[in-house]
Image (cartoon, rainbow, N blue to C red; front, side, top):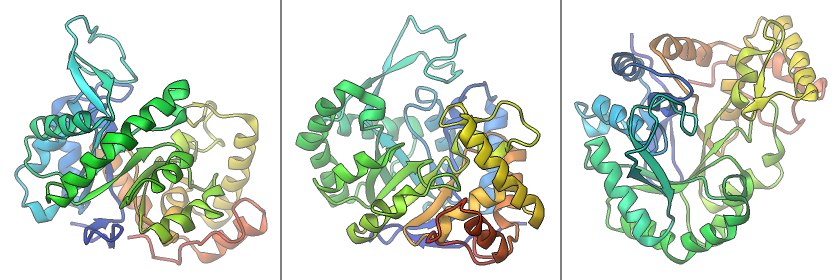
Length: 348
């Protein structure tokens, strides 16, 4: 039976997105191969349960994720989904690509590699290339992928200047002409979003992992700034790279921020898990539902790698969590005292 997810507005765009979305990195064979059939079944399951926000990117499998997402959405009516993809990398043929090995974290058969380009021409080319790979004429949300120090280190200033002097104008033109409905960034850090807001208007930020059960620093400045700016948050990575999905009680090698978790994080998660046990709450359910209590957050988009995971995620998303659970986390000093928390039954 199809779930009916609530929708929330995305900035001032008039777009409504489902509060549970589909992060499609796994459809590009993130870390491991996924067959075409399994990818199709996974995406079909997501559509069938009522998820309507789908986020992909050229980087995910060097175009593989976009091809698969487009195939899944093409037969639907345009009002049945909201599609997000990304710009900032051009996917170039690489006849020497070793498709038998992980490349940039993806086990993809696609013989291509990526070249950063945040210029006006680069953004326009990336957008058109994505339309071709998706096989779709319309893309709703265009996100600038991986600007910032975390990705570019000493090249950060160069790429930001490239975007500021040309790439942003391309986004404006695409939106003004009606070719896209919303613009934003898709990043893992807050600082670059703050810099970007100073150069123009953004509708949303797809932020991976920075507002979660383990991290609430954005409450102080960033999330209020987003509300003032008129930008919504699409929250990726709600499990902080895995540790909030696996927990630490029965899992020996948890990951946090794409690396083995440090001891202080393991200790904190162990304390959160103990309170989960007291209230018969699944840790992953709490992690999935927590960010949506903040008014800046429009949607949470975990990675959904197979059909079983889709159904399990919907179950977690709909799990009833007692209000006292959140209060106990605050009393124990495990989440910020002023963090908004869900009311029972709020998530979907």
